[in-house]
Image 1 (cartoon, rainbow, N blue to C red):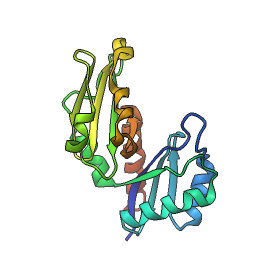
Image 2 (tube, rainbow, N blue to C red; image 1 turned 90 degrees about the horizontal axis):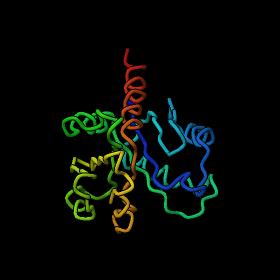
Image 3 (cartoon, helix red, strand yellow; image 1 turned 90 degrees about the vertical axis):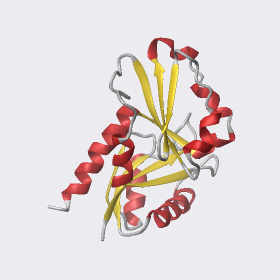
Length: 189
């Protein structure tokens, strides 16, 4: 049985490091037997179908990246989310979150091998600027756009937990769900 997954890669195409062209990544994943592979923007978003379980997919992709791409450091993590898990992250967002893009910068901070209770203390939101909410496998973060230079969100980069997070803006997150939904229904009809 083929299931549809969203794959979030942490640590590629950031600041000119760990360059992984999306067309090459798609080709590489197809050669590994994944089907309906698509990518969205260069920040490491992949949607694919596989009959493997999420842990197998994660291990396989983490193994093939250094074999097929010249990486500046080996620290690339892969998060594999099922359609249902990804849908739940969108459905369970805080009330109003991401609905005022002209006023707030909203991000989904996806957690890898840690849970939100562990990581929440690493955030130090600035009152009146930052708001954070714990979700299942995700931290929802919102910054007042007009005050974003005063945001303390980047303080989390100093935390040891930072290497277990990958951040996507809310627009990218919802766009991935659109692509995921389309891919998921393409073969069920």
